[in-house]
Image 1 (tube, rainbow, N blue to C red):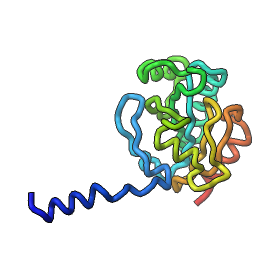
Image 2 (cartoon, rainbow, N blue to C red):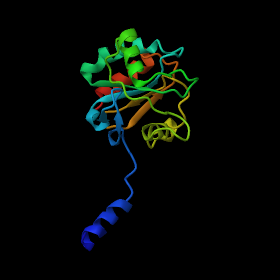
Image 3 (cartoon, rainbow, N blue to C red):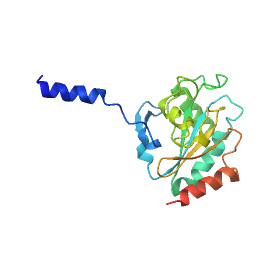
Length: 183
């Protein structure tokens, strides 16, 4: 290998990657194992939800699906992120989770591979989400399953909703409608 190529390769390897600044900076695995660049959702309003199959909030799958069907043609996407971080309430494999969501709740919104959403080993996506994405008032660990992060068309976090906020509540639907109406 010639010296110039070697120097260029070395320089490339030591340049740190730019930190993620929007949702669009992430690529994550779908529930069926394919890589999905979240920049594919640029220009859409995105609701990121950590989900679990054996939780008191699991019934929110039904209302999340209703929410998705109500607003998807206007530009809303819901990203379901299974996590087993709270009371081991998502013990299944990705295949089992996908089957559960399809048969029990007829979920059609995008589902992703199970990931860690809290603690030192949380995934980069959740490290960014829980940092507030540059907004300190939105920062903090995920408290439980079915916590929701609303992301605007530009990929920035707009707001955050605790698990007990129902998907069809006026609090959440008003925020979604405002985000959909924003330029």
